[in-house]
Image 1 (cartoon, rainbow, N blue to C red):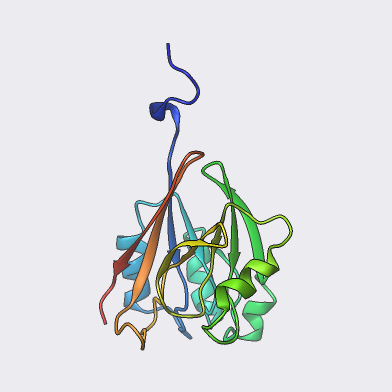
Image 2: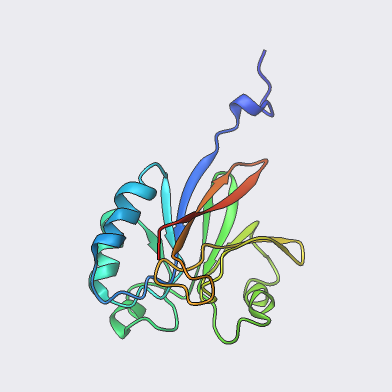
Length: 175
């Protein structure tokens, strides 16, 4: 007899994550990300700095959930919020871009979600991939789908989320 906490009964949800595309218009690399790299995901999150309205239109074609970033045009700011909290895979996930210096970024972001922090916070802005815990909260930054000066390549992320686990990994999409 199967119990509700058996591993086989817990469905993982695969989530594609990108941030910092910095595009005025969709391009072949964005199509590659959405149609090839993230096609096996059940949800796509974009953590801001989309930049152009047509790029947001393209993201919405695949059902992506987005927040705005500090570099987004006003027509993006009018269409997507700065912060979202969604439910996926039995977890509450916060989605935000970030702002200011890379130093202290995670702590500033955490404060935005106090006092009721979600299980996981997805963010962007720094262009640096990160998966880990900060002050007891899981945090994930997919890096930059646009050129990443500090790392020298473009990255997106995959999150596998269930009630009992969260795993993050990064996919290189070239330079």
